[in-house]
Amino acid sequence: MSTPTPSPQVPPGGSPGAPGSSGAPAPSSTTSPDAPGRAAAWLADARESTWLVSLLAVLVAFVLGGLLIAVTDQGTRDAFGYFFARPQDALVAGWTAATDAYGAMLRGAVFDPQARSTTAAFRPITETLVVASPLIAAGLAVALAFRAGLFNIGAQGQLIVGAMFAGLVGFRLDLPLVVHLPLAVLAGVVGGALWGGVVGLLRARTGAHEVIVTIMLNYVAVYLLAYALTTPGFQREGSSNPISPPVADSAAFPLLLGPSFRLHLGFLLVLLAAALVWWLLERSTVGFSWRAVGANPAAARTAGMSVSWAFVGVMLASGALAGLAGAVQLLGTERSLSGGIAGQIGFDAITVALLGRSKPLGVVLAGLLFGALRAGGVLMQASTDTPIDIVLVVQSVIVLLIAAPPLVRTVFRLQPRRRAAATTPRSAAA
Image (cartoon, rainbow, N blue to C red; front, side, top):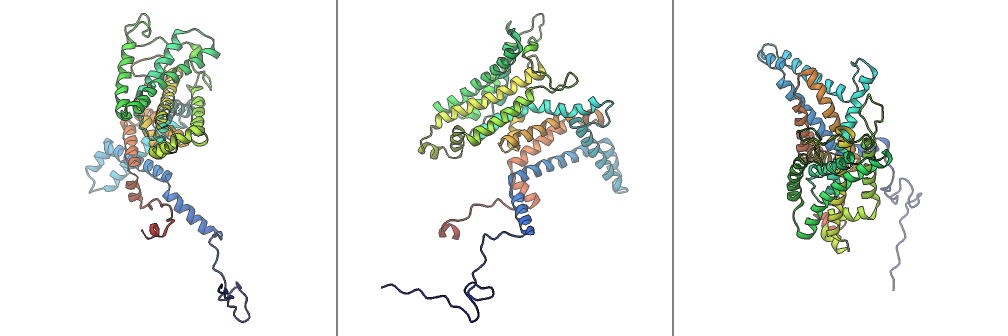
């Protein structure tokens, strides 16, 4: 026999749910907040976001770089000699040294209003894009491996091998432009993919750690290039220097803005590669399986995914992107193979991937920032006698702070990232 449900108590003159009555229901939690509430919620979310941590890390790096510029400035040091007599002189001198250096860097990276011509005024931004192009491609290579749970420290070696493959096609074959350039780029991509695929295969078949293997293969690639540049197939005829012949004009990236600027088609190709990586990771089944393996290999294996083949596929794709960076570097700017073809691009790519949070858009923005630092550092040194090594210091501080986000949150008193709400009484109590 069922117990009758008691009827709701209605106060005199009221009705259930009427405003002001004791039976009025509590306001729904889905009620939209007012504008100040929305702003506060957005601010709280922004403070907890990893993107804010990255921006603050860059800010701190520039502040510390400015302090270092002030310390190394001779005028500032002289002013500090009588600091207690006139402290404002030392502070003004340090501020002037830092702002002049960063102002010169900005003029060398974005726009130079002091240039003698319009072409020279706009050249800095194009130089930033040129320097950033291989950095973005190599950063995508490292970021793709990071998303799959692999640490590809071998972008430097993969870039070198990709440049070797692209150069061999570029200066040894004589083909029309519509065939020669795509073939040279494809050769660079294939070369990098093969060098990265070795790492994935060793990881999948033998369990060899990719960090150790990629570091060792970096050295192998460096000495392989050094040896190749002494062989008849790579060394320039009539020269005893370790340098290759220049690539044919039909294998070089065409300039986008004419001969007055070095910006070439490779920059657009790198942006296309970033869009492709985004689609691969966020919209494709293969990318989902790679991300699942990176998040939890055991769970991915239980779900029927092949972890071994995922490792091989990820390293193939990562190496291909690094090989693209080598092709862009050779066919776009260098035009000839030499021992320094890679510079520090492969190692800077690790910083770019970390700063970009291993997201394609973040990698593009981080690559542009590092390209601006490199391009602007030249004018900074020439105009203010500030050592260009300050750029390296700024990059190093960025890496340090990105690798230790709790430090940034502590300095700026940011809230820790909120965890998912508890779904059980036991987890709620915990």
